[in-house]
Length: 373
Ligand SMILES: [Zn+2]
Image (cartoon, rainbow, N blue to C red; front, side):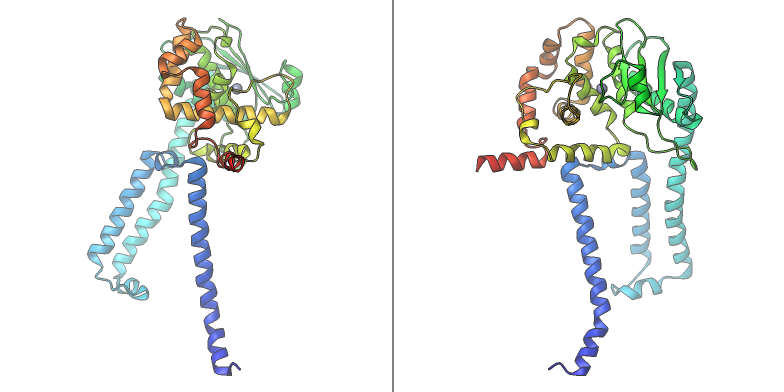
């Protein structure tokens, strides 16, 4: 029999035990999440934070810890070291933390706002907008900013002499408007119409608008469609059919899913591949895209093209993907251009990709493992 005193003592300890247990679970959970995300998406600090955001944080943390270590002759007991601090030192520590918490987001928001304004101004000379009457000014502006951002970024790296055409952008708020207005398949939610030698025509749903702050995290669409436009320019405005559709989409998916805002989209794509039948994913040849395709096939196509773009960029360098396009633009045949840049035949590179254990998603590996048993 448990006597009363022991029972009371045990009960008194219970909250602290539960607290510790919760802390432990929280710690394990966070660790699991970080490891999981890193495994699926291969996160590195350079992807998570731009260096100019990361460096002040690291510098401030180093300064803070140096300050604490050098000045505080604190004992290692938990409750002691804080109470030994002088008021002045506590105040300085609070100020440093407050500056970090408030200053950094403010500074990033400020720079972001300024660059958005600049992009919007440039966009007004670059695009001709035909928007649905339901689209708000904020939605139209957000869409233009994202289109211009990708256009400027890619042109500056991969197009020597950009054509001086005006790009027509048809913006809509409902997908049915796209399907009624343009000859696009049912599964498409945005598209670019390209006629060799002419200026491109973009059909795209408007970006969301946050009523309070105006800005929202961009979707992947504007950057994706704009990558097709810049590919066309890198091809010297020749026919897009000079390059396989799958390679076009690999490039557009890769270029539009880079960076922090797209972390979740990247994860979703990788996870979506995990749930598929391995026979859909593991093929010897790149899948094709048809007008009459099931939604699942379309999803596989785009997810795989993203993975392939990512694989090529990691294996051969992302600039090389564009070198292939430029060589084709200069008159070389696509397969020759691919082989001369990568040292591999296009189909061999795809085969290697689909068997690559680093890039094939985890569940595919799991299926492979099950089949082998
Ligand atoms: Zn596309």
